[in-house]
Length: 441
Ligand SMILES: *[C@@H]1O[C@H](CO)[C@@H](O)[C@H](O)[C@H]1NC(C)=O
Ligand SMILES: *[C@@H]1O[C@H](CO)[C@@H](O)[C@H](O)[C@H]1NC(C)=O
Ligand SMILES: *[C@@H]1O[C@H](CO)[C@@H](O)[C@H](O)[C@H]1NC(C)=O
Image (cartoon, rainbow, N blue to C red; front, side, top):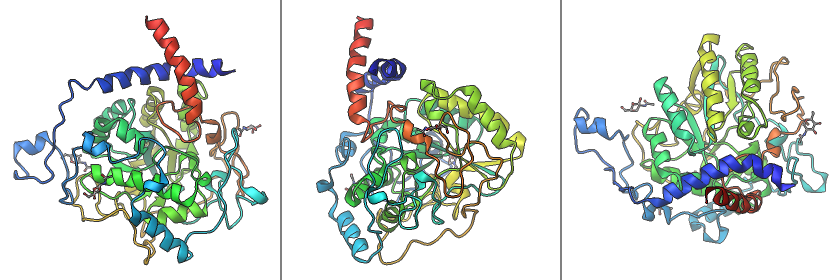
């Protein structure tokens, strides 16, 4: 039974294996430390060679250096090794009653995470975004008339193609990044950030967050915020997107109270993550875009897209030709919502940075967004698949009993280390690598 899946995953595994061996070669990598402060005037030609925005003045280790990478967990974080301030912040928030005391969900393969004791995931105490329960504090929609561009799961080897395309169209996007992928592809991370793109949090190892303990949630968000802060001259992320959209009242409260992170979901799903494995096709994605872009302008479009494969990037490139002609204003997601700042202490990659740490401080609630249409609006009834699975094209009801397609995507992103499917992809990739070697030898 593994073989069909294995064959599907093979090209990506081969690609990952080849790229990894290339990366690990390292002989031609010359680590270069960029200055943290400019000693040349702004108009000095050196500025044009090393574009880098202002920093908070701290001397962070060079991104990609051993000093830099050794400070972070390799895979699922060990909760006994967390900075004690994070744990103290969690304890204080729990003691202050700010973190709902609801149970962890259980991961059930093939379906959405399930809560014990028949608790209703759409009920007011849980309100799981996986089940399309809309908490008014979360961002699901773009402002009217806008197309809020964002990509999940980077950086990956598919990122350069995307970055090149964005740059050639004078666009930047929000990249919800996975911590371990930043560790694996530090130069691609820098390429993304240094080209003016916006960085946000997509957790450390891409787990179903509602299945985790409070401390595990702190670890997933904390390490990702930390590596982004320490690799961008001190910029503290302000937004995160839960993998699979899997968040509930407990998870979103920890994100907000401990790290000041605002939860971002989406209102359209291309299923582009599955295009590399045949789960969807370029034609289906194209047809969906035609429908969405030709549809109502309110709310604006917040489309779930990924920078995981050439195919998913190509799907965006194809859609892009239709966005502006259909009258939409494009923009990086984090610039279109809230107050337009991508970071808690800086506007964007080029703006000044206030020194800060990643903790929100538990005494004052983080301020609500001041502008922008972040209030969830109902989908137009003509909307095609909202987050429906590959075979369905249903409009969700307000109670949203429909299952998320994301639950079927466990094996879809082979470059990404994941908590739950990790052992599965490991057991797949060993025989696959042997098969590859056999072919190559
Ligand atoms: C991030 O930078 C801060 C400030 O220099 C430092 O205290 C902290 O140890 C760094 N974190 C990691 C994981 O390297
Ligand atoms: C940031 O600065 C670089 C270099 O000047 C520029 O190319 C880029 O467009 C700027 N990005 C943004 C988002 O302003
Ligand atoms: C996908 O949608 C079809 C049709 O609505 C449904 O029968 C099936 O159970 C769904 N599968 C998952 C995994 O959600």
